[in-house]
Length: 324
View 1 (tube, one colour):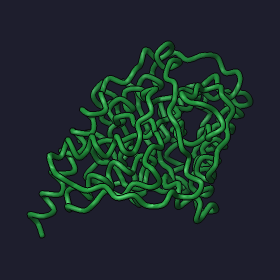
View 2 (cartoon, rainbow, N blue to C red):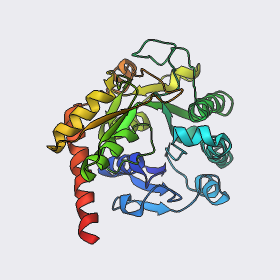
View 3 (spheres, rainbow, N blue to C red):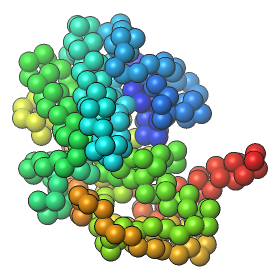
């Protein structure tokens, strides 16, 4: 049994990652300021520490906690919010990350603690390459959120080389599933589920043919667990310790809407709105490297994952209606 810290552990992805470690008998601690995370997401057996990752208290926990693994998921995750307030985004996603990394360096345990960082495969590659994108294609982030995520990857490479850190970056696709927040990269799934349950039309921007790599959260949790416990390549260039975590397939917004309407068994209209300025058109990522080195591939089919997601949102909606 090892001691694991999951930042953002009361959030959507973090709570699933915590469950994956608990299932294998690890001691799991969570850091979350509960700004978007929820106490109800904290799995039984995990210990919650309510701290902002920018705080001295979070740094003290990392410095003195003697963790074998730190999975760093806490972030400002809304791309649109990063565009509106890049200073806030950088303060959380860059300065918050550095607060934790510096605390780990000060602990003297950097070489003995595997750091797993949640980066993004959805928006750092940009529209100038033809997907599926491998880890080594040129990076062209187009939002402050993506810039910050790539920036932390560069910091990790620095800490690897200069301070002997044992760090890895996972470039997640568009993660969806139960407990999802509507403001993340795959927030459209949560938004569509909510609209279907309320009997409102689904709004599709542009022609709806823009594609994303939608990957189910349980598969992401398993990839994250494997990256934490398995041997990894030597620390060399930036991409040596980076892994895409997706499906390798692009799904259009139109197709996503059709799947969710089918899963719901309801008849909901689809309305088109003008294309949003600056929206990336096509994004999906190759997972061959994760398959080879982490022995991982997603096992959840899109229709299956969306159906499970809709059931979860429907159950939550029913509870809310009953309590109204």
